[in-house]
Length: 198
Image (cartoon, rainbow, N blue to C red; front, top):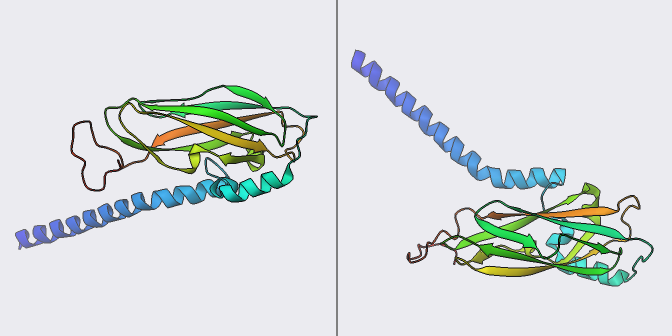
């Protein structure tokens, strides 16, 4: 009788633990879309609609064609390297006129002994500048795969909308480059596994 009760209690405990594990896995998978929705709602570290639709941004900016030479905006370029790689802009800042087409180059080097997949996410300061910072070309639009020791250079081509509030004189464009989990984990000399990004 006692053994039967203990067996039943163990089975109930095992069932509860399995339910907890399943819920934790489900929550883990739900975090990515949940994070994206929260960031979109708050406007933090996400690609704006104009960044996702580069063709629309190109047509909107090229149709304007007016440069405001009476104003100068200082654009500062900041990078956050969250991992074993080098990531930096060619220049730390530049002065531009609203409506003027500008370009800055960024360099990324994979210092690891394995292939990696990575992507950059931009953020802006002050936050209201994000609606007026139109990127026509940006490495942040795509995910990239880099081989061990590989170096890539990418341009960011942008136009600041002349409708930017007059009190904004400096914009900081910051990129955080992060490794995309579960991709590109092949070490040098190791055979790639099925589904590995190369």
